[in-house]
Length: 85
Image (cartoon, rainbow, N blue to C red; front, top):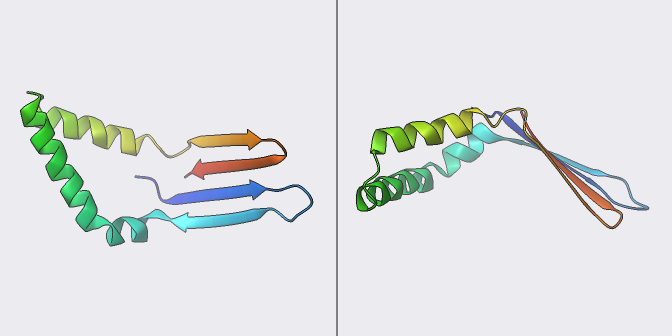
């Protein structure tokens, strides 16, 4: 499971902004929403006749594969880097 989200914004003629977000406290705060999302996914799986265990297992594999992901966005002279560790 990812542990840390790092966001860095490089702006022209200014100091870069760097933000570190620990993901465990964020997940704990949003856990009621996560529970509702999982229940919604279970209902959707039943509606579309998809195996629930397989779908939730695939979702967990995707979340587990997130560490090491980097997303670089650049627009004009501003650049944003998002790294998941």
